[in-house]
Amino acid sequence: MLGELVTATRTHALMMAPHMRAAEVREIMASDGLTPIRGLLRELDRSSSAWSWIIDGEVACMFGIITPYLLDQESYPWMLTTPLVESNSRQFARACRALLPELLAVHPKLSGMVDARYELSVRWLGWLGAKISSPEPWGAEGVPFCRFEIGA
Image 1 (cartoon, rainbow, N blue to C red):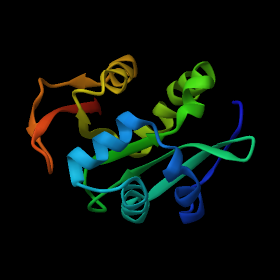
Image 2 (image 1 turned 180 degrees about the vertical axis):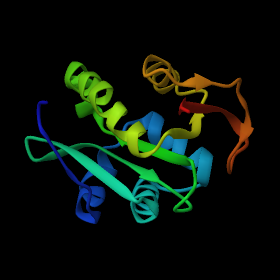
Image 3 (image 1 turned 90 degrees about the vertical axis):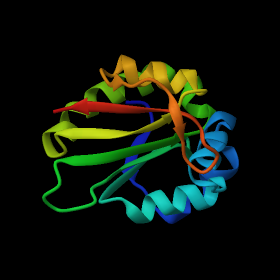
């Protein structure tokens, strides 16, 4: 994989927040009413595991898994990205496909919500094999979001 996958830190969040893709800034505002830095730090703080993909010293994306209860069968993945993901899209896609079985081995059911207006993200989740529901009003702004599920 181009770049390096490392344990995510608050410093990564501070570095990445000003560079997040506009569609993701809009998504976290619509879902939770949060700014990029507050959204990144909140997800990082709630995660049982979180990683950053670093390319040439810059944070391309941060992602993690939130597991609300130790014995819960459902975990909630999150991922926020910068334009570096687009300029390294093939490596990003391969890395995601390779990492997904490892995540599902530990977290058999991954589910969450995605802004239906963020068509690229919806298509990417479908490409990964997610079942995607019809859009329904959700979140702080009540805009259309789709529930997605991968695994069990």
